[in-house]
Length: 362
Image (cartoon, rainbow, N blue to C red; front, side):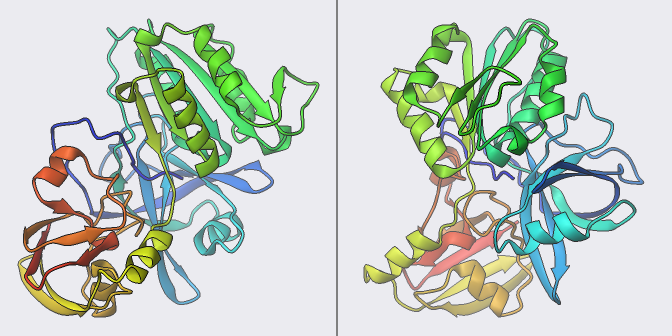
């Protein structure tokens, strides 16, 4: 799955959509032992509009409680007739396990509209080399980007570097094989347990492997996208930096919880209980946020139906503008510099620092 996290270099403030829709499941495909792709029928009133690299937020009722989780679209709006997400089972994962075990064709699933900034624009005149570094389920948005690039940009190339435990854990293995028939597409597998079925690197992704990949690429034309487990992404980012790749050519998609950072902030003594004011849908709400709470968490506890998705500061579904006062965000990489400069904040990871905080959402 994938929340939109990107390098802060854009000047425009992207539109954030928080509407809901109900889509019928067309098909559920078992991709690996612990991952499925869920393909949805198009909306009855038209075609779902989304960009490659974006995500859908599933709103599921599990054990009598509404849960929300964001999952990247693995389909391409240019190639695939039906939008699809991939979901990998996670130990203790309430929604991921529910979707793997219980959802089937014909079911109606409540979703939030597509969102996310881990995207790129496709034009037939582009002549670039799209380099994708993925690990595990991080392949999901990368598949969407790869398919769209190959379909929309005849002069562009795609290189996928994909790390997994073994051959059996490769999500979309057959689709990747089919894409390899295009001489503009190249895949480099990195497996902890190697296979004799195809060429691959043994072990873990390393700076040496990344360096070898980049030797065959014209760096000036490279656009690099990274998505996967945090250690794999950290290694890739540090390696690219060491190899002299400019930050402006690198985009990343992350799934990390802000819980640890929130705990650090609570312990550092900076936060105290303060009242905040939220303006949403023309109504005004006032409530007191304790040091161990975020502004969104307290609002939901007060039955204020605020928009949200990831609750980790990555998707921007809860984004609001701080009209007065100051807040501290546990995580701000989901916002661009332009948004931060204009006063936008993410209530799901925000704590009030002053007594006059007023945030307008929507």
